[in-house]
Amino acid sequence: MGNWIINNGLTAFILVVWMGINIFLFVWFYLFYDLGDQFFYTRHLLGSALAWARAPAAVLNFNCLLILLPVCRNLLSLLRGSFVCCGRSMRKQLDKNLSFHKLVAYTIALMTAVHVIAHLLNVEWYNNSRQGVYDKLSTALSNLEDGNKTTYLNPIRKTDMDPQQIPTYLVFTTIAGLTGVIITLCLILIITSSMEVIRRSYFEVFWYTHHLFIIFFAGLVFHGAGRIVRSQTTTDPPHNFTICKDLSDQWGKIPECPIPQFAGGFPQTWMWVIAPMFLYLCERILRFIRYTQTVQYRKIVMRPSKVLELQLVKTGFKMDVGQYIFINCPSISQLEWHPFTMTSAPEEDFFSVHIRSAGDWTNKLIDIMEKLPEGAQGPKLGVDGPFGTASEDVFDYEVAMLVGAGIGVTPFASILKSIWYKFKTSDPKLRTRKIYFYWLCRETYAFEWFADLLQVLEREMEERGMGHFLTYKLYLTGWDQSLADFFNVNFDKDTDVVTGLKQKTNIGRPIWDKEFEQVRKENPTSVVGTFLCGPLVLAKVLENKCAKFSDVDPRKTKFYFNKENF
Image (cartoon, rainbow, N blue to C red; front, side):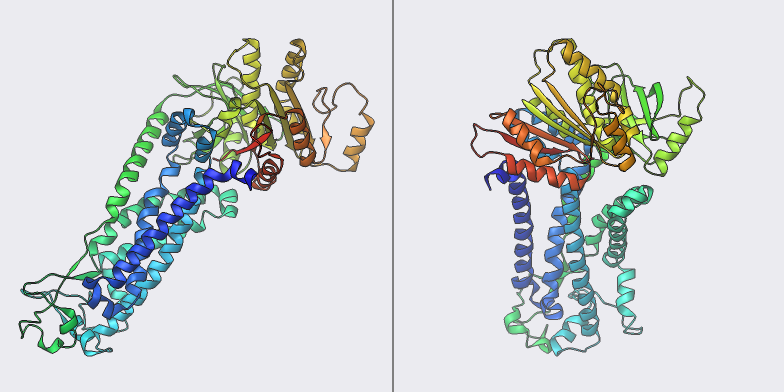
C-alpha cells in the first residue's frame, strides 16, 4: 500500500475529489427537485423522473466545464512550467490529461443516457396528462393556458393531432427537444468513433467526428433556453398547494386558491461552459498563429522500415528534451494535425521528428517525400508546439530508466543526444548520474534508426572514463530460429552484428523483475524515474514493478513511473 501511495496517491486524491463533487451535485439537485415545494405540481405530473432528469443535468454541466481543459495543450504546458517548484507528483498529473479527458467523457455519456431516458418518460407522462389519462389534478394542471392571469405547466400545448404523434412533435419543434436530439447524436458519434480500433485504423474518422464537439457545445448552450421544466412561482395571495391540490375546480374562484402560476428556470449551462470555451478559443487562435509561421526543411532522410526523418527549422522555436509537436500538411489535409515526439536535442539549431508509416496520413506524407528530387524542399508544413511530456522531468532524477518500444524510442533519442551535448560542455547543472536505457524492437532494421547515436555515446563515455553512466540493452522481440542461430554463431565477435555496438542485442523480452532488482541493488538510496514510451500493456507491467520494488523507507530506493501520453 505504501508503494502504491508513492506512485498513485495524488492521482487517487484528485479522482476522489472529482467523484465527490459529482456525487454532491447529483444528490443535491436530486433532493432539490424531489423535495422542493415549487416543484410539487410538476412532480405530480412527472413523478420521480423529474429529479432523475435534472440531477444528471447538473453533473453534465460540471463535466462539460472540465472536458475541454485536458486538451488545451498550451494551457497544460503553461501549468507544467509553473509547477516546476511544486514537485514531480503534481507535474505527473498533467501527463494523465488524456486519461482524465476520457473519464470525464464516459461520465458525460452515462449522465446523458440517464437524462435522455428520464426526459423521454417525462414527455410521455406530459402527453398522457394532456389527454386526461390521469386524475383530475393532472388534467387541471395540463389545461392551464398562457393568458393574462395564467401560465402553463405542461409544455404540450397542441391537442389537434394524433396523440401518439404529439411526443415526436414536441421533441422536434421545441428548442429543448431539437437541441437535445442534436447534441445526443453528436455525443454518440464522438464516443463511438473514439474507440481504440477506429482511432488506430481510421484516425481521420476519429479526427473529424471529434470536431462535432463545436455543435455539441453550441447546442448545449441553447438547450436550456426552452425552459421546458417549469416550477410554481409566488402569487399574491399565495397559492397553497397543500390545501388547493384537492380543489382544482375552485382555482381562481376562492381567495385561498388563486390559479397557480408557473415559470421555466433560468438557463444555467452557459455559465458553466463559457470560461472553458473561451480558453479553448484562445488555444485555437494560438495554434492558428503558429500554423502561419514558416517552417523550413533542413534535411529529409528515409530510414529503414519506412521511417521518415524530418529535420526542420522555425524562427523562434525553442524546445526541451522529450517534448512533442503537432504537424499539419495542407497538401494532405487542411484540418488534420498529428503528434510526433521530437528526436533532436535542445542544444541543436534544428528540431527533428521520426515518422513511422502507421496510417493513411503518414503513408501519404512518406510517399510525397520519397518522390521529391534530392535537395528539394518538401510540402508546406504547419507546426504547433512544443508541448511538455513526462520525459521533460528525466534530469530531475538521480537515476533514470528509459524504456522505448519500437518508434517509442523517439523521446529518449532526444534525451540521449542532450546528455551527449551536456558532457561535451561539462554542464554543471546535470544532476543525473546514471541512466538505464532499454529499447525493444520487433525488427532488426529498426535498430538502425539511432544506432549511430548510441555508437557516439558509447565512444564518448569511454573516452571520458564514464562508461558506467549509461547502461543500455537492446531487445529483438520478433525473431525465428534461423535468426537466433545467426546471433549464436556471431556471439564471439567484438561488436554486435546488427548494431555495430559493443553491447550485444538480446533476443526476447526483458525479465523485468531481474532488471528492477539490479537497478535497486546498484542504487540503494536513490529516487529512480522510470519512463516509458510504448504500449499500454507494457505500461501496466512497469507500473506494477515500480510499486513492487519501491521501498517505503524514505532512505531507500523508490521508483516513480512516468508514461508518455499524447
